[in-house]
Image (cartoon, rainbow, N blue to C red; front, side, top):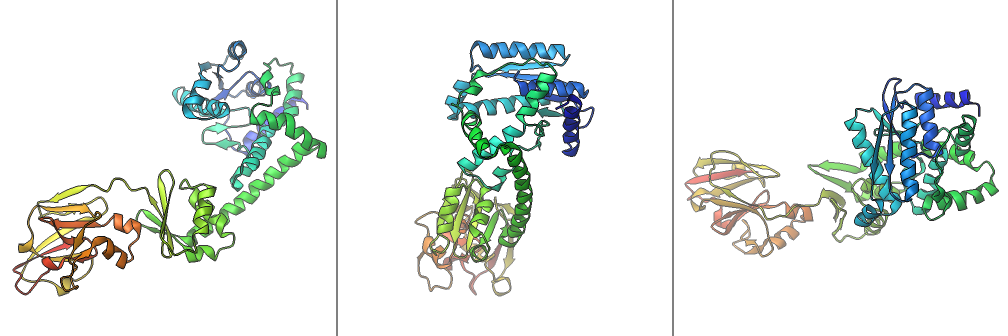
Length: 445
């Protein structure tokens, strides 16, 4: 490929994908290999302002140190600011329980972003190319992925641009040869220890035996996958609007409506993936949908509760041990999930204010301070309307078909160790208003 054609394709790709403006300074991630050296050359020829950042992962002994010196000299020759850092990648991988590849990736991107911010660069740029994107898709296919895993490496994500995705590896080497560029050789790339190297050295050459134009064909397929993903996301967005009902902080999914959808299992996977649920958990949840029993499934920060006709997605509850004292009824009392308003009225007030969210209590039967807490196992009360019969709260909740969430969030209104009201549900017979009541305390939840 002629140099001018190469640069034209580079600039057109930047323009088509809106990667950067002409005068925006960019921080280039440069290892010293042929890809990143070509990236530097292209930015220089295009007169884009740039700096050079190099990570020494200390994985190749003296070769790693020589890479740093080479990149530093390259930056000096291009009159570009130079930034570098050394990492103990092996120790980091051990501490985090991740592979060396993942450790290097995490360390690299975190430091690049920090360096970008501290030095006022608009974007970070890496030298990923078309073949890297193909390898990414193949890895995702082998490991298992949703459709989003098929779009390969994106030209722009957050503050990272990849302006060389338009080129294949052969294009890059041809340009470097024509421009007589010097670069460092990483001989570990020839070893098939790492996953990408195994694909690059062992698998892709065999695929090229089946189709000599494999790279071009697969790159074309990736573009089709991107279009399919766009249509998929549009359909998924419509499904979310149909299926998800927001109730306060929680989201309710109608099981009946879900099961009527085409590809209902895939839709459920996509709905729950945003909340940290993986494929195996989704499979388990889906298989239990036709079972009427209540169930609960946990991810790191969320849970899915199957209750009657719904799947309920909620945050994992914090410790339910909060105890609050009500000493003053002259002003509203704030709870984490609601506000209580008090009204003290003369006489026996009941009928016109009846309702589960309002308690009409005989004020003279209450002993202050009142205590507000979440219910606990062993709690009991005497529900109004049950002829003075004692009932466990757990049984009362079951009879009223409360979900796990509703039970957890129920507040108990306690006076002198006696439950006067389960807020929003039922008062206790012992505290009800009678014709003899002189003052009625109305509590609205």
